[in-house]
Image 1 (spheres, one colour):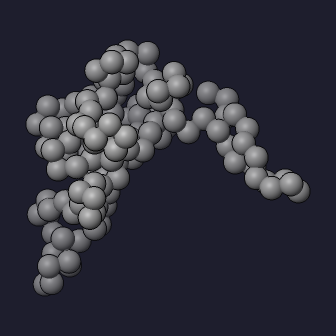
Image 2 (cartoon, rainbow, N blue to C red):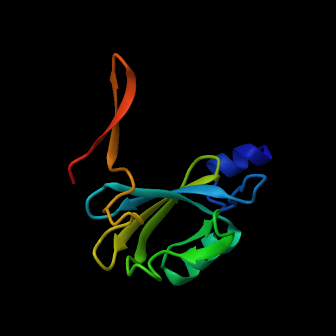
Length: 129
C-alpha cells in the first residue's frame, strides 16, 4: 500500500497541512446542520481542539492561535470531528455557546448572503435566518 493510499484508506490519523502550515476547517452546527463558518487550523490549533474539546483556529490576519468565543462568548464545543480522504480538510460539528452565533458581524452564520445572477452580472442578496 502506498503512503497516500494508506492515508486515504487506513484508520491512521496523519493530517496533511499545506505549504503555509494550514488546513481548512468547515464548522457545522451539530444540532441544525447549518454551515456556520470556514476557517483554518494549523497543527497547534488541531491539537488544542482535540485536547480541550473547544474548537481553536489559526487566525491568518492576526497570525495567532484563536479559541473561538474567547471575546464573543460563542464558544464552539466540539461534538464530532471528521477528516476528508486526503486528511487535509476537516469538518467540525459543534454546539455553540453564548448567543449561538458564529460570525463576527453578529450573525449566526458567516454565509448570510446569496449570490444571484441577472443580466448585469452577479449580485448579492441577504438570506433570511
